[in-house]
Image (cartoon, rainbow, N blue to C red; front, side, top):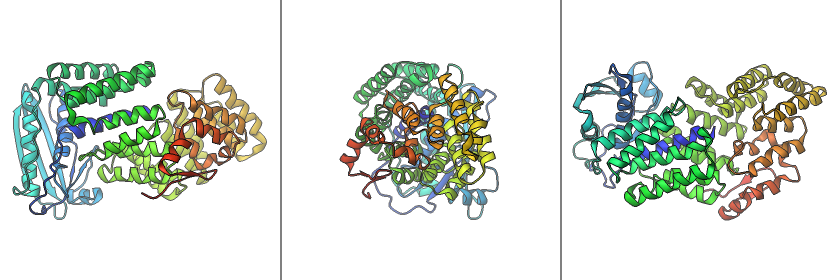
Length: 498
């Protein structure tokens, strides 16, 4: 769903700001040029301290990314196996393991860096401090690792203004709640924590980025009016930038999301370009820029953008799912299957992920598995599954098309089926006028479904409908293509090479 990714994009904006990289060049190249940071283990008896372990790992990765010509892969999932094999699998020269233990107000961090070529421990150490001094502890940890990997002759990592310790703690807790936004009142809790952080330190930019992200999600998660959620998000960013101008580029992630929802394509692209052009870039910047490009039909560019995300975060389920969909739209079934398998192993889910894989299964001649996958997607949405079997019968034998369309139309009238499924089914079964009725929902405020679907190869017949080009005009795409030099050939978009 668009929301899931939007939050994720918000995370990128927040994390990337905390420390910015040096423009200075290193005096000599580092002995090791790439490092994978695995999730830190939380050794505390209190599970609520998990935010500390996650925050330390995220910040360490952002800080080390300041080193020029050094590749940092901030790995999200635990990986088992020998360090040498793990390093080879992740495409790095070294692997960092760590653990965090919090006891009362005391914090103890242990870390170890293992060289992948021979399994030798390059560095093992620890840092201790108080939870209230977490910011300073992270600085010491980053510099200790930096000295070992890149040598003490390289430039010092830039130290940002240290925020109020209580404000920083509230911000870290808010980030943790935002990541777990699907549970209970966590989204509201995150808003409260970010507001508390701002109250304690009104010049701390990341708290504004976190708050803006949470506000931007409220319409989708809590049914808040779109204008209200967007307005609060943009107002928050404007205030944050005025108090901490350093967040300007990272704020592009929030602007890009809002503008994309408003179908302001040029403004959205410019904002995403600022985000991916920041000195430290999270994989989600490229992932969401990829989605925006796909929404305006730039399928090759969308693929290239998300492949950049894979370089940074190779085991991110969202990234692998996005790559799989990109290859599906480009009809590269072999690569699509490779990435769907990887995404599934990493726990990828969501309606659009399952539905696009069902399309791939159909093209692979695996109709029964495609039907089972469709059942999974529909059950995920909580809707009726009664239409699925008639549709798959019709796909095998068009004599059943009328029965299948009737079943789908009943489900649509009862609001028991999601619109992009109706779009595909009506197109498959030859009801192009009915499919256009669904496609026109995109003209409404926001997105009725993921807009990139209208450029899917399976919807080629719909793109020949006499009203399809008018739809593109109404969505602002034709004006956007004119501005960026792209052309429409009646089926696909062609843009100049960058």
